Length: 269
Length: 370
Image (cartoon, rainbow over all chains, first blue to last red):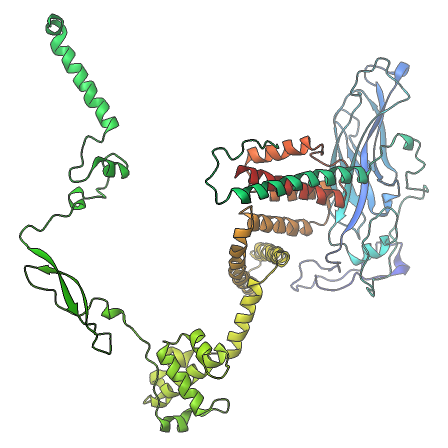
């Protein structure tokens, strides 16, 4: 992308950091071009989902559960560094089904009786990405096993792990989140010069955006990459061994008249 | 007999009509006369819609009024410089042997290699890099070997590259042509004059070709990626520029340039992919690589995406050549191996491994089919 670096003006940090440039009809489509880092990807691991507590004695027909829907950093770090706000779209039967959360922790609590799909839209800071990203999650209230007495202490938790990938991040964004624990940033080759990071205006004066000491944190699910990797690696080994074996057999068979039933005796799948 | 009388006439009629009916289904009504039934059946059994085979011509009509004998006769070949006389069988009709030259003599074509006199050499053809002797030798070899430069280069006494020899030969021919022409305009249309041999271009071309032929798989994949991205860029540029007319010439020039390059690269990429065919067990491997490459390129176009989305796209690209049943079998295999169809912890590493596993299962299934 051609090259005007986004203008930096720390003095005007209170104003949106964009300088008016008259639209010149040159061959670039946007009035302001942003310098991006090619072949670099920034990744933000997140976990999103719901947690539902049965209300027990306080339950009524229309309100049997109290549930929370949330988006958090996978390591419980503050994702507010990347995400500006989250919009939860609830079932139309709720009042104001479009709920906007302007600061981390990005969560919403409600009471209800029914399970439905929640649409979660992630909006990023202006230097990150101007397009939102949509996630979908099915609110689960009832556990798999119909265990007799419904516990009010133990919630029904449904979480999904995913990673937000920014394939060609803007230089400014990169510089800003370089050392933040919520973001996975690759190492750049030595001598790479980045612009000085511009702090974004953040609304949260509430204090911490991370979820490390979240009241519900001990119910959070654990996502272990290592387990899955191990499983896949061992599967690959098995498949590779079969392939080698089959190739050897095929090589031996070539030259001999074709066997009556090539797949006989070798049932793998 | 009585029964036959009573039911006889209608009864005997029916079976015969039935017989006639079943026959056309079994045999093609014995249509062929002149060729055997089996041969006719090769054409499809039934009579063709267009008479593709003229049945009467299938067996050669023996020319009835001519008397054919075969005789062992001598012959000469006008293509030969000596007067070698050989013998062969000749079809003699009514005692008259065939006339005319040996039938293969007309194939003895040769190249018109230019012949220059010593005067002409002194006047037009001297060159610091070449002695007269060498040039004479070159031309003698060119004549002898019909401009097969590889052979000429092999036989040339001093070591010269094919490009140097070609350059000298074409240079001399061109100079002679121009010198002998009554006026320059007469020969300006001649290919030698219009497009002279360009040594450096040829050397470069051959070098590039050998580089492409010796490309590694990795390089090939990268090239396919770049090509896909270029195509995407030009496509999107074309689409957006279609609205703005004055910019069209610029864009189309750019587009055609990169399209040309893409075509050129595409042409050169395909020979190398053909070479890889025998070694690859999955034949459409190059098309899969191209699919994955274009998927990667399109992912990079997005400003943001989810890791799971990327994995889905890559899986789709990798299975693009597989049918629905194969895909189901891959999923079945994954389940049997105890691997989640969609990874529970889709990190970059996990997704990469998952994709590779799926590809390996595809390979295994393809092998099992053989």
